[in-house]
Figure (spheres, rainbow, N blue to C red):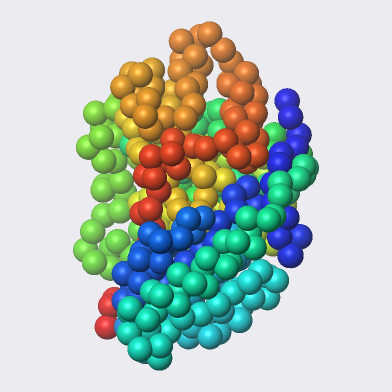
Amino acid sequence: MGTSFFGFERPSGEIGVRNYVAVLPTVGCANEVVLEITRHVSGTVGLTHRQGCLKLPPDLEQVSKTIIGLGKNPNIAAVLLVSLGCESVFPDKIADEIAKSGKPVDLVEIQKIGGSTNACATGIEIASEMVLEASQIRRNEYDTSELMLSTKCGASDATSGLASNLAVGAVADKLIEDGGTFILGEVCDIMGSEDVLAARAVTPEVGNEIIAMVKDLIFRAQAVGMDAVGGQLTEGNKRGGLTTVKEKALGAIAKGGSTPVKGTIGYAEKPPGKGLYVMPTPGRGYENLTGVAAAGSQLMLFTTGLGAPEGHPIMPVIKLTGNINTWENLRSHMDFNVSGIIEGTETVEQAGERLYEEMLNVASGKLTKAEILKYNEGMEILTYGPTI
């Protein structure tokens, strides 16, 4: 089993597995300019979202933190921010924080520069120069301890907890053994088995933080008259053979392997060290993938039973399934098949070893299906409060 990969070193010393120039709007009003720039400049990725204005202060802080984190992600070589000019977040401060990583950062303000036409023209010129510089960075070999992986499940069925989630758990254990970092999220999928996960915490305080994440989700649902527990199983989950919230949760937390939980982190917050961390991301993919990418995750292992196609603009998402029907019917979206665990042709450990190698291949440049099909443009930033 390999213990190294080929990546791009950043000025901060972190290692990227991709080499993008990110064009990032500070507010949703700038999305059209961002998309126009990325249409014209190869090597750029646009990270459009609908946030940045008229939210309560805690949400605005979270939006700013997330944009900064996305800009600092090791997969990004340089960042062009596009601002409208009157948003509630502060573009100059965002640019300054991203620049602390040592990578090139620039800012185009639509109102100041004379409108979207001028902003597009200037942005294309700046982004072109950034791509030219980024294209000269070469891959070198690095230890797997430099990797931060994250995980998610979507369109789960009974095979998820019996096969694909277990294979991911084996990768999590191996990566942490090799000195890397792994983020487990989706509070909704912890709900029902939070006591099991909390029992793996390195301290009682960390265990209590895991329990508190679930209680907070339940409380926020109750505040609007809803039952989070009762609404957790989707119709697809039920058709796929998942019968209870606890049954789904026991299968979902298996993605975190058996390693002790080192700590909990906030949404879009970078882990303070190596090991296994839990982030309170939602089950919805757009906000989930964005949160871990902003935390610095270079790659994601995404398990699916019935077939979920989405990826993320800057973070390769490896789709794996333990459902042989999904593997055969959705080959255009699936990257990895572990149905042999259920069929009895390979063990969880063997599947985990193969998946670890696949992860290193993707880290070294192999494209995922979502990247090939460009099924990776959906992104959103999680907020909690009302829009003002």
